[in-house]
Length: 196
Image (cartoon, rainbow, N blue to C red):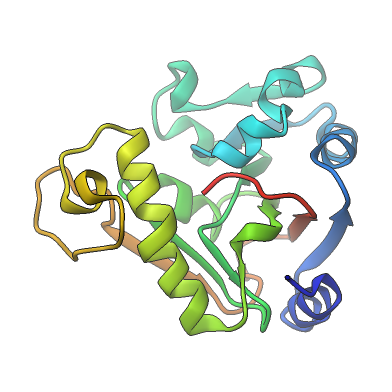
């Protein structure tokens, strides 16, 4: 069981703002208020979809995403950016793996505000476990969801560090601390299992 208080303390030491919610519905209400009137980009995220945020975000914000047909670079120029993570260490390191790089890039630079929405299942005891989780749990499930023909998608059990042309693991980022290029970076913790 993830220790939210420990995670919160360690993330705050690293410069991140942290909010904690019992349910995705509570987190959605909070984020809708924080993002009202802003342009918001987002990266592919099962977590954001599962909590219903993407269904409601356009009510009070201007939403930009290549998933909605906008050019892939458009989300890079919004006031705020939303995504989840592939692994979060209780010690505070945030791990993401990406194929194109737009999602991981936007967590580092280009936005005034970044919100990382994280279900309790993404939390691991330390950096090594968070990296392992990102590679061996999140990435195979995302490759399966995208119908890729990679060993991890076919077998569904772990990363094979493949050289498949359909590989989705091409960029890895670790946020050791809040990046200088972002004015506000907030981790939104939700006490539910969400996404991969």
